[in-house]
Image (tube, rainbow, N blue to C red):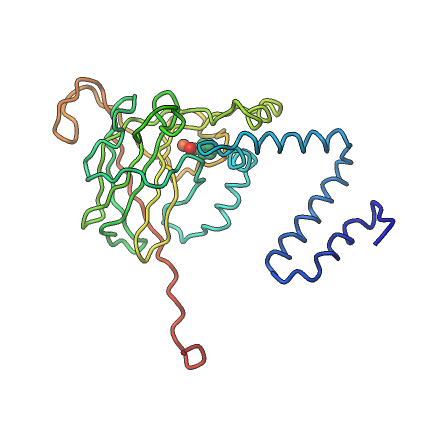
Amino acid sequence: MRNLDEETITQAVLARHADMPNGRLKQIMTSLVQHLHAFAREVQLTEEEWAAGIQFLTEVGHTCSGTRQEFILLSDTLGLSTLVTAQNHKKPRGCTESTVFGPFYVDGAPEYELGADVGNGMAGEPCYVSGRVRSITGEAVPGARLEVWQADAEGFYDVQQAGLEEHRGRGALRADADGGFHFKSIVAECYPIPHDGPVGRMLDALGRHPWRPAHLHFMISAPGYQTLITHVFREGGEYLDSDAVFGVRSSLIGDWVRHDAGTAPDGTVSATPFYTLDFDFILNPTPAAPAATPSNRR
Ligand code: BEZ
Ligand code: FE
């Protein structure tokens, strides 16, 4: 293939992929090449703009580290994460909706007993969180595993804090036999996504702010159910309609109630005001495996 030009280059690349044995990879790469080329044609991309794009992606890569995932931030801020979440988590009405995972989940968070203080010394106003995990048909999901994570009052996750040895504001708990759970933490506050890197500069150039509305992250799993990755947002908070990563769903806005100093739900006396949040999660069962028939039985 020689003498390729504006008109013929796309087909030439696709022809080079004709014998790709992996059908799904072939489908994805064909579409990617077609859309990339269509994009360059549509905007009549200049060489300077092409170079600026390469430079930007290079900086995104260089900004990634063990605790910073700038590519996820890029995907989140361009709405790709919300699109992929939405198309992969269609559920029956009544199930708790999923939303973006974000870059601050970590494996191996400490395991806590129900009622424990998951904040573990994290700065912020106390918040007592409770709820139940149920199935779409109403029955309790006993022993469901809940992983929670959140930022502190200044908007930083524990993993963003250099030198912090232990986990704060994150933990794993098991629901009781009735699917009930409760724990103490701190009230969630609005915070900006990390914006001191290329994605922050991109938002700036686009005239966008980097803020997320106050939220608490949950990942809830139980045998026989699809794992739910979601947040609970704070009613009445700022940025619910301009989340930098497009993650807000009305059904995920909880009622965080402020209480004056006094007796807290765990029976202790709080010398400072505190919050409560009660929120139930409704899980979607995993699809039943197809019944064995004479043709698929082995
Ligand atoms: C988060 O909520 O933790 C988050 C989500 C997307 C980008 C940055 C942070
Ligand atoms: Fe978050």
